[in-house]
Each structure stands twice: as C-alpha cells, then as structure tokens.
Image 1 (spheres, rainbow, N blue to C red):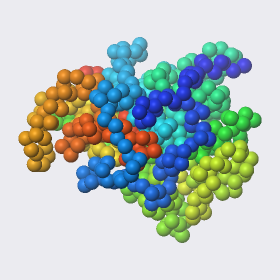
Image 2 (cartoon, helix red, strand yellow):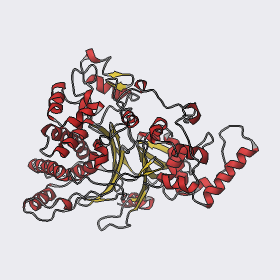
Image 3 (cartoon, rainbow, N blue to C red):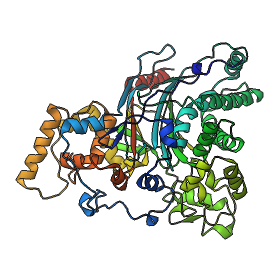
Image 4 (cartoon, rainbow, N blue to C red):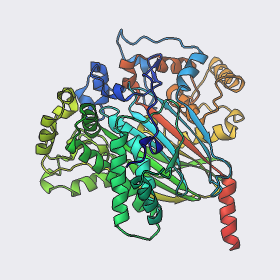
Length: 541
C-alpha cells in the first residue's frame, strides 16, 4: 500500500487567479493554465519565445540605454493610470516572500542567512515560477527560478518536481532503502524537503499521484545501482534534470485514462521551461542551469565597491560555444538551418529546456500522440506546427550546465533571476543595486547623473525622490522587490521615476508583454561569519 500522498506532496491551495490592476497575478491555478478561453493577445504573448518577433506586429522599442519608450507605441489602447505610491506598492509587493534561516538547524550552522524573492507578472497567467526548499535528509538548500514559454504548464510541473528528483539523487543507499521500505509497508515516509513558499504558490493535487509514482521509480533504479559511494552533487544535478525531462516525455506518450490528467500531461510536454537551480551546502555552491535565466554572485571588494561574478552561461544564440554544440550534434547538411535568426530551427530562443517535445520527438511520434490525445490540445497553436528543416531530432536537451564555486568571505549574496530582469538591467547594475540596498549605502552616497546635464529642477526632483524613499513606503524591506522596482521604474539617471513606474504597472495585460517579460528574482544573502569561520578552522588544522 502506498503511503498517503499528502505526506510527500503538499495539497493544492484552492483559489482563483486574481489580478492587481490587471498586472499582478496573485493566485495560480492548474485550471487557469489549461483554460480554453485564451485571448488572441495572450496566445500571441505566450508564443513570443517560440516564434520570431518578426512574425508579430510588435516589438520592444528601446533607446540607446535599453530603456523602453512608452511614447513610441502609438495606439488608442495604451491608456495609463496615475497610480498612487500605495497602489504601486500593492502591485510590487503582491508576490514578495522572505525567509530567514534559523541560526542552527540541528545539523549544522548554515552559510545562508536567508533569502528574498518576488515576481512581477507580464503574462496572464504568469509563466515564471520560483522555488526554495531545505533538504531534510541531506544538507543544504535548493533555490531556483523557472521561466516557462508556450504557457505555464511545464514551468509549473518543473517547480513541483525537480527538487524532489535532486533530493532523491543526493541520498545514500541506506536512506533510499529506508524510504522504499516505508512506502512498501504503508508507513510514514521520511520528509525529503521543507518548502519555503509564498501563500499563492501551489501544488497540483490532480497530478500528485503520477508525480509520486515516477519519482518512486527513479529512486528504485538508484537503489538497483547498489552504490555505496557518497553521491556527487554535480552528477546528481545533471541526472535529476535529465530524468525529470525524460519522465515528462514518457508520461505524455503513455497517457492516462483520466481525460483531465491526460490533457495536463500533454500540455506540460508541449510547452517548455528553462530553469536555474542553486544548491548551497556550507561553502559549496553549485549552479545548474538549463536555458537563459542567470545566477550572479554579488562580491564586495576590500574598498567596499561591488562586482558581479556570473556563475551561469546563457544557452542561446549569443553563446558561441552553445551554437557550436548544437551544430555538432547534427549533420553538416543542417549547419545553416539548425540555428537561424538566432533561434533553434528559427523558432526557439533557448537552446536547452524542459518539455518542448516539438523539438525532441520524431514527427511520427508527435502525430501519433496528438491523434490519440484529447481534441482540446489540437486547438493550441504550438502543437499544430512542425518546425522547419526538422530532420534529425532531438534538437533540444534539458541537460544542465553545472558550475561549482567555493564561497569566500567577500561573496555576500546570490541573485537568481529569469531573463525578464537581465533584458532590462546589466548584471553589474543588479549587483550594485542589491549591494547598496543591503548595506544602506545608497542613502549616503552623492547623487550621480552619469555625465548628463541636469537642470536645478531635475536635481531637486532627484533629491526629493531620495527623501521620500528614506522616509516612507519607497524603502523596500525585500531586496528582490527593490530590484524589480528599479528594473521597471528607473530613468536615465538610474533613479526611480514614480510616473514611469506607475505607467509600466498600469499597462493593460494585452500591452504589458510588449514592454517587458515576467520578472522573477530571488536574492540569497550569505552568512559571512560562518564562511569566515570555515576558513579559519581549516587554517588552524
């Protein structure tokens, strides 16, 4: 008899999607991801990462500084509302979450002080996800940001499942056997993870048994390997990503007698998601990245200045090594077609992703699965389209690139963020904003105008903005919120422009995606005292 599923997977939180000024998606819902009633605008936005922008009638107008020009988009539909500061804060803070790590968790003193996370939707429903959990049967914390495309289904599935696969892969044989025996005999299973979730985040009740069965098959296969060695973190991360993606593919092929679950399996497989995961255990930091989200370390130099250390590589056409890898995996006759218009097969922006079976399955398999699947799936644009020059699949992989970094005393924080942030802000600017926010330095430094000529009135406005930020609601307690506020509302001087922020947050949902992507940010703050102690202890020994 199987142990009750709720002991392993939390239940779904009931609730429908509510919006704050049609921009902030407060509640996710499995049914909202599957809804038939999708507007043309929503469908177009969800496909922008899969089809070239040239196929759409819009782009993202920017000036030489990378700022979006609201005035360049000429339409009667673009009406902006003058939101008050409390209204702006209500939108920005709707999805913020903070967690402080206990000083001593019973096993070891953590190198993580805590983390802040937040999410600002552009798509409706939001296609990004974020996760954080403490490993209970091993050491360390797991944190991730997940960026979905062609809908939220794959991102949702990855957010629920990936950490369990990683946690299982990190377990010793003895613990795996103990868990298997408990399940086999109907006893309580050892909890694998302690989740740190925003109240609006959820687990899908309908799919939990299927998820559990696939996970159990994975740990049974690990048991059959009969290895007594301590699991290698890099190998565990790589195998977990690949195994989850394989399970997503297999579940969609096998199907289910439950029509709703069958439809969900196919939606997960035919949509896609990229993921950037951090595993932090003492001074050992591993980043596993698939796609174009990023992990950037905030380093404080001896003189107090901040520098950015990127710990992940983007898997897209801007990465020459990635382009070479993709081309090397296919015949020379496809050298000119496998990457076109900076996209995989001229369609997909990320070169690595979960799901996206349109770029992995053979054409015959795709047709066979779709013909036997629910008719509702055929209404989705992504499932109808066969990529051009599709000769030697698979063209896409979910295998992550894993980076190891040994934390040093000068490493103060880690920023995990989806590409919606990095499209707007440079990594050095991100680290500076977070670093100065955490230390409060931004309140004492002279105002810089970056070489611009400013009038006395403009300087007065900048000073008043600083005064307001110090005195009231403009000062964010959550560093991820503070970063998103800057990303969406900064002007050419790097200061927050309330009018600009108000306009960007009041855009109706059919226009919001034209100016920015979903933005999801997690800022992890390290415990410098613990890291220092580690190095002192090693030096003494």
